[in-house]
Length: 467
Length: 170
Image (cartoon, rainbow over all chains, first blue to last red; front, side, top):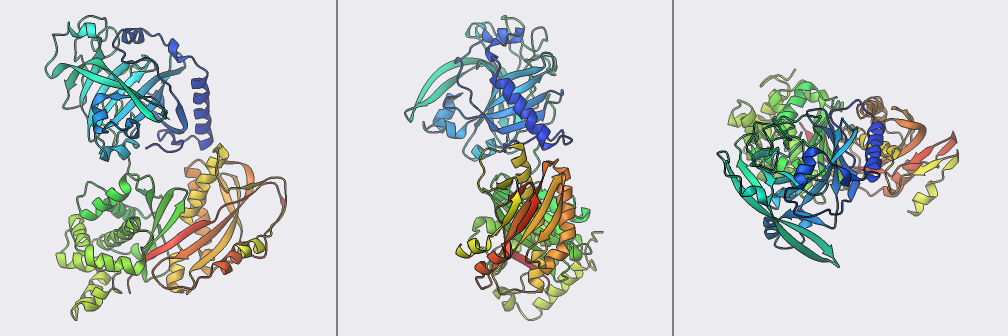
């Protein structure tokens, strides 16, 4: 996810200041270097391939920098480009109904550490979303870390805008790949491996002049291979058997090319370094801190883990999973109040709304896992209802809403996680809803039964003890 | 606002004052203060709900200011205006978590500074309450805050938090 100066997770030892200084140095290097003089052998080779367009303006937004490291140890700085000019495959123009395509396209400048020259190699990475649902998800991508729900296409280019490679992505995984060839070479490439074909793509160059989008399209040629698993295609530089080597017939796909960090033109496959597992980014919706009781933290983790299919977890994911505006922060704290299980507050910080869930460790430390989970779901539902309509949300209205619409979902969610009877799950779902109208309408004896069940699970007389 | 101005009488003897109203270009120092604010907002939150459910208030707002001293990678609480019981109880744990958060996030303050964090809590739990905002404004700054021999002072925008819900077992 792009956020203002989001720093390298691999290097927690650095202070914010050190990381900030590093970005400033990279910026200074970028602004004071002539990038058109990149003349490595492989680059010269690519320059002979089809280059759909010449140079285009590159205007990095240095407030949006992602810093990470490839598996081979090279540092990478990925910087958002906010250009008036943009390049994209023609099929996406249709998708955007000929409107200004920039709204859905994400272009980044990617600076990769070159350990030989001790500076950086410059690449352009373009993320094209498949449909509108992928638009926001694009913001969570970096070349190394793709959002697991993101589908569509990534292309990489060198600084002179010569294509390097393209990848089809389905829910964060590579499903096909392509590498450009020249128009001349395409007529000689009859010896293609199974699963590979010749292909061409219309690349369009768009710009905006006087608020009018102008578009010009040209054809690029590719070897296109379908890959079930991490791709074989990319190949490497001259002599590696993985790439064209010369302008002669290409031998695709070559052996899986493991990037050599000494080769400045080699970048790994997107999403997982050198063809390894694609990274599943950590969920961004919740922030479980180091203070929380480990058993409680485990229940929180289960409640928000979207491997589980219950509808409450799905609601939470849909609302908070990809949002940069709404966050949930969960802490535990001894409220020194034996009647209180948990609470939800929210705070607004700039454009961000944080929902703070506090679990009362004074009570829940001795409660069963089932009861803790029911409390977490209860509080998550409050956060969700707040997200839906924050101005109208309040305790009593939300509790009425929960009783009327979410009681069954909460029971199902509990039964997904625990071997618990439907009656007990239902009773736990009623927890905290004793002041609702429906509670008052319950048949005689039922409120007492619900209270008893809750009390048993609350004290671990029933259920799985948490500690 | 008239009352706010009346109470916002701050006597200052210092060489550097920073008001954090509005953010333009973000320096590394500002980045640190933004992180501090984020951590402060998070860790000042727990406790209020407990206080409110133990001693239900009929007033819509409560508020105070916490005056911190930041230096290197730690904070200390210099004082708190309009002290309320739950803040007193909460403070040691709050300080511990805030300092741990600073260290975990690698936040370091090159210059020692006094930071005023006004905190406004708004009860939004559906219960009809008295609008006491003017009264609370006086709690934020009491009869004026005095700072002497302070080389650096920051006055933060108020931190708002809204109490939405509690789950009780009656």
